Length: 457
Ligand code: UD1
Ligand code: MG
Image (cartoon, rainbow, N blue to C red; front, side, top):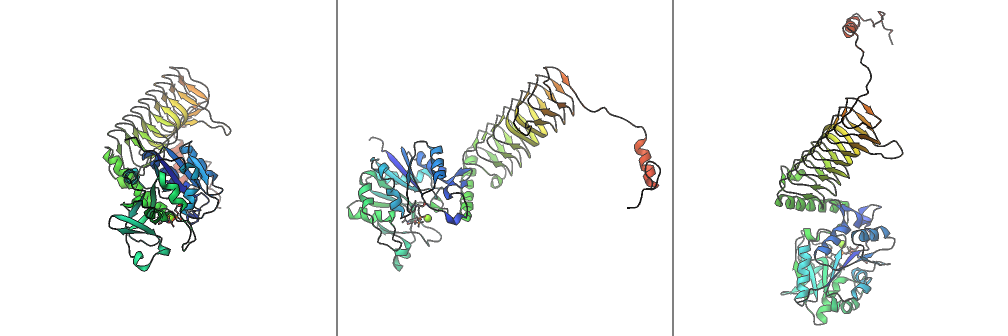
């Protein structure tokens, strides 16, 4: 049997006013990824060959996010919000291309899993014209109800239009739907707006398909799968569900987490084998941790690569472009940004390494700062293989420290240091014998060092 083609239409024309935000609803993030990108990723995962998105007027930023995720996404504008069927028909040009399966998904329902959407597609493959996701919510209020006749789905009744008996139905409409491409335009074209809201309801597709002698089914899924987001409270609830899924997936893939409930992951966090993550670690977007690495407590990572066997933290901060090689040690209160730390190098305490390369096996002492910013531009620091940077050194970029060079403690390095050389620049130390002892004696007599009594203030 030839592979079935699939068009996914993502509805994102909603206003999202209840988010009380100047950011469009679907650009809010869960686990470091926009709601929109979540559903687009899921649509791709379920095999959609074509993606279309329906946006509202002035939603350039939403369209841009869709294109950033998949440059071939077809963008359609729904000028007036006249209902879910009207929104789907805004993508008429894409529907007319006759994909076998049409998936209609909501951009504000980001937790739906590819496996669930695959079940909708499978139903179409078996000859069903409309397949709908059903679920039994804790509180059915506000949802459309699925009117069943044995195994067949007969109709979907929106709450406002439902009879008291229909409102007793506990199986609700999750909203997402699959429609057979061959019949889609015929079905959608017959949807009217004679209902309580005067809107074109996508849900009417079910009764219309039945009228046309076609079959409709409901596929039951969990409430979490079809959890919609309208408010910041629901956003936070969805985040909790997603974090739980991500942690479980990480544990199942072999990551050791001592207190998983305290670890915050991103949707794209990648772990190798035998990685240990201690309590209270935050993984922002774009982090890869290779085999055998340990991330210790209270570390914050984003856009970073942690090499095999490396140790990070406790209390370390890896910012975008931090690239740690094998067996690197980054210790407490060390910040690394846009810097390649080569195999075996160490920065164990209190340092800032930005716009730099730290060569293999080099040792960066406590309090070392790469002074990368002169107030106008950023400059690079290059530290050679096996170099030793004494504590509390300021490396004023642009600057190069050669292989095996040695920087004396407290040096402000402003010029390149050749390989194997010593650079040291610090104030000369003065020693005054007995000075401190005498200070304490005169203080005890209520005088100052010149022998006079201090003035009362
Ligand atoms: C919809 C379903 C309801 C289901 C519920 C599940 C319909 C008619 N009703 O109701 O049966 O129980 O979802 O959450 O489909 N949108 C547009 N343009 C429009 C209208 C909506 O793009 O003109 C988009 C919204 O941005 C949203 C999605 O379609 O992403 C759903 O719209 P919404 O208003 O949330 O529908 P519900 O009333 O929740
Ligand atoms: Mg809704």
